[in-house]
Length: 135
Length: 328
Image (cartoon, rainbow over all chains, first blue to last red):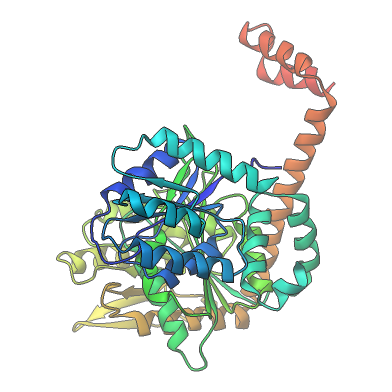
């Protein structure tokens, strides 16, 4: 039996056109031995949920710099859960004001990472949470 | 799980693809049940060097199949390389396929090679079988960006498109063995770029060498077919060249027409069955090798194996003598 690989979708929902952070994360996860599906810029919540379904990923990382996280994130989570993917872990990176962090947590976001977050912390969190979901 | 896959339930398809990719017992059992429902889909391989526009072309081919009358259901398996050092991968083919989102007649799955070298992954064939059983009419299989010898796709697909672009090489590149040889249809993408005439001439020259009795010629700016003498087999497939610009879809209707013609040709000439047979032969052989290898490896201890290897390193045994020592 082949080794179980962690598959992560890295998506950029919304309209901001700056995907350097998303690419840095994609590269870091790759170097940690994960398979990263990169969807590109300006994805709608529907597009991200559809890709999450087709790719059967373990985790979804969303990069949002536009301030629209409280609109986009709940919609994406709702669509993913509606597809029957209850165990997919959700991570959000980008510019998230401190006061929004508890709100996102409440929505079911597993990890929130602002500028300067060390990539190894993100990698460790994904490994830990995905392995929990598998058990 | 197999029943839900046969009914085309997307979550079930997606989860089974993961099981098959990881070669789990559940995945193997499901493939056993589904196998009788496979063999209907047209498997089309798309290969070519990195940056020739394979993903954009796959996107356009799928869009055009969806616009056909009646629309065909299209699955896409896009393969990208795994890192040889970490085993990780960035799978980015979906970036070029955003126009296909929201269409329930399309299913896109990305996969990493996980150490395979021929341009596909070990599990690609099994994943194509799942999608075939799930009722997709066409399965587009995009290989990794291929060099000259990533030619595994020819053992999997019914029809192979090799994508070339202007400016990649001269007519000596075109007569080398390898990737150009496996084409059923040659696609000259980015045909709005300079050098397209020279690139097409080089490819045409190669085709003429391959079919000395029967070929296409450029005549007053029009491609014309020079008929073969009566003694050549009538069922020879004449490899066509199609110019495309995948970013604005020009040349796509003509390419789709050619895909249809090739499928009809395969069915009329009996090549469909021959390719099917050789594909299953390859798969069976791979399974036998893999299984015998692991059975044998389970029979001997790591110690026995490393002793033989030590003797080999010390030049006490030759590789063949070591083999005899191990196989007893």
